[in-house]
Image (cartoon, rainbow, N blue to C red; front, side, top):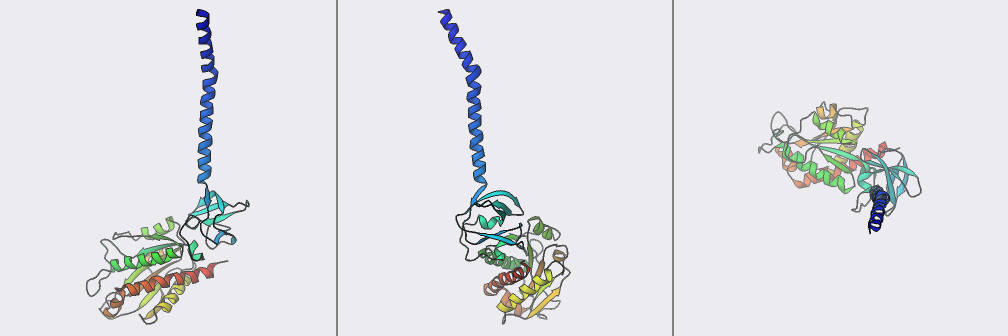
Length: 298
C-alpha cells in the first residue's frame, strides 16, 4: 500500500514538475496570440467613401499616388499630424487623411478641401466682449455664431475643423495661433466685426493678411473674391489689406482675419444679425478655400 501511495505521489510530482509549466506556457502563448491578433485587427481599417486620395506625404499639397475605393482594406503602418501611413492590398504604401478614411457618412465629392485641416477663431469671448453695436450687442456673440456656421459648411465638404473656442470663453491671444499649429492645422481663419470711432461712419467688409511668403495674401484674395461673389448686393467690399494683428503676425500658417462688416453701423448691423447674411458668408468661404487650394496643388 505504501508503495502504491509513493508511486502516486511520484506521478503527481512529475505532472506538477513538467506538465504544469507546460500548461501555463501554453496559456500565456494563447493570450499572446489573442492580443497580437487584436492589435493587428486594430491596425486594419476599411475605406467607407469613394475616391479617397492616397498621397506621397502626409499633407494635402503632396503628390497624389492613388485613389481608394469603398471596401478596400488598409493596414496602418504609421501616423503623423492626423494622417495615416498605410499599406494597400497590392502592397503599395502612401498617406491618407485619417478623418476621411474613418468617415462613414457619405461625401458627395472628395476635394483638396476635404483633406485640409482648418482652424477657426471666433474673435473675442468671455470677458473680452469685442466691439458693441449701437444696440449694445456684443461682437463676441456674432463671431461665434458665424464660426459655427462656417464649421458646418466645411465639415459637409469633409474638412477637419478645429474651433479655437466653441463657447463663450476667453482664449489668450498668444495661445490662439499656438493652438492652431499644435493641432496641425493647414489654414487659419479669424472672424471679427469692425467698429468705427464714430457710430454709422463706416461700412463694408475687409479681408486682412500679414505674411506674404507663406500664402496668406493669396488666401485673403481667394476668400475675398468668393465673398464678393456671394454678397454682391449685401455690403461694400473693401478688398484685402495688410493687418498687423497678433493672431496673423505670430502665425506660421496661411492665415487671414475677416472683418465682416461694421457692428456699430446700423446699416451693416441690420445684415450682420441675420442668419441669412451669416449663412451667405459661411457658404462663400469654402469656395474661396477650394480656389486657394487648387492653386497650391502640384
